[in-house]
Image (cartoon, rainbow, N blue to C red; front, side, top):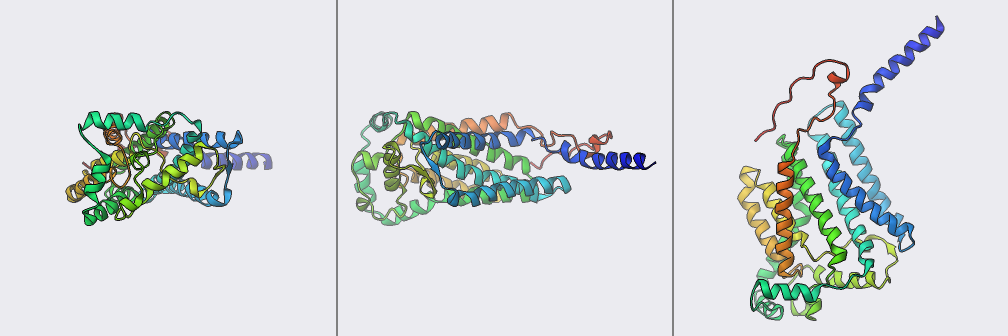
Length: 342
């Protein structure tokens, strides 16, 4: 009798855990973003394991823990109940994970030392817009400090717009649209990162020897800062992956241009924010030239990449509930899922 009671207790415990294990499979719509983070992490890990870099745990362990806790919280909330919290936690975890892992992968790939592409990109700019001259453009812009201030603020809007968009879409119950956006976002970053080592570039300011003092009203100095880091990485004088490595190094294709297109598309799904954010992102797209220090062809390539990824995620969107629902795990028929809001 005691043996039978023990068996019954074990069977009940196993039955209570079964729905949890059934739900630990990844839905297809979460795979692209997580796979992107895994690829970036693998690149950085290989660079550390091969001895090219050491890893600053003091700088990154807290961020890695935050990523893991956000994802775990989202998944546990998903098992207990639905609502906004589970998907929003996972989406924010992805955004943080990509923002952390992609610069580390770029830093590792910068050491491959393929020839700089500045001369080629400059030539492509001349073919794209006949007579275009960076020195002349700088001379024209320095007469309008207010425009440079506006472009500077637009340029940094790339950082705060995605979290706001994800929250708005989730609060409207449009989680599938939020996942489409984050997948297009992460895939664009993946492609730009993988292209980067084959077409590294300093930027037009460095190529034409234009110092920041020639554009003092450009409030963001990233265009003058990152070539220094890129040169140090190529010379192997930076040997530690730390917070200083969290810098945008990619010139071609421009992720700022790609991000502007993606954000205009994402906010375009929200009726009352469509036109204001179209204007913001149009200005941000333009700001990638004087503030981000991108070549014209960088923007063209970034825009094309964003449109390609939008077409990809829209064309391959799948229903969110790809796993067995708890009712199905018990052998019952699951209730039909309602369609997402338009």
